[in-house]
Image 1 (cartoon, rainbow, N blue to C red):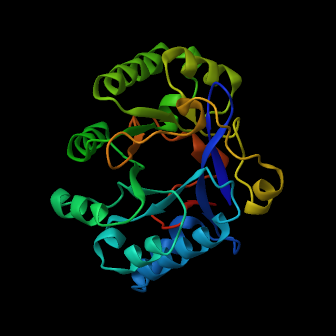
Image 2 (image 1 turned 120 degrees about the vertical axis):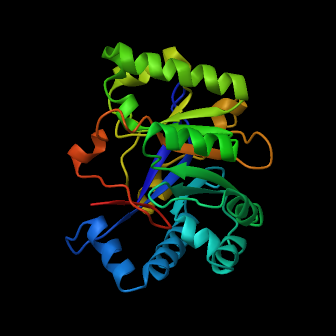
Length: 268
């Protein structure tokens, strides 16, 4: 399934995040843990990535596609490069922080060798680790964790933290994207603070690609900041999960689990 990423002010769809769901009743963690134990974790990642790219060809053409991959897959060899090269989609690769990136130089070189891709860091855990990713990867975009977004309209602490991130983003020239936007009040508060892009249940539920292919209009051709997230420099890098140490991710209460996976965030 795919979840829209939208411009908060206009509601225009700028991209989609691919979400992989399992239908056998097992949780995402269980499935991927079993795959790792059986030494087929990368095989499962590659399979979900291929499935996501195959389905996504029916999405509106001007929208980008976020897919989740593990650092191991990026560094594993040529298979990811082959898959990416065979796709005409505008791809953003989200890298989970569940697995440590021990060699940032090698990682940057591997990402830099991939054609027509931008980079995102997904599920950044503790704040200090998130800040290290920001420093090492020089992001052009930062994804605000849902734990910062939830209740931001009525929580001065969260507003202050996001205000600081807006100031940071303005200072280094990057774009903020808010995750887990669930109420009109949260959306209004984010806009008031200067956050322009977001995703969440308020803005669009995860749905099969056929729903978007049949009913979703192509991205509007308005101003650049309302039509798409514009890369700054040769790569767009999003640090996802900043602030996730501020309480537990609120998505957990809806049964959504984010997990290391190519081709999508795992939801149970």
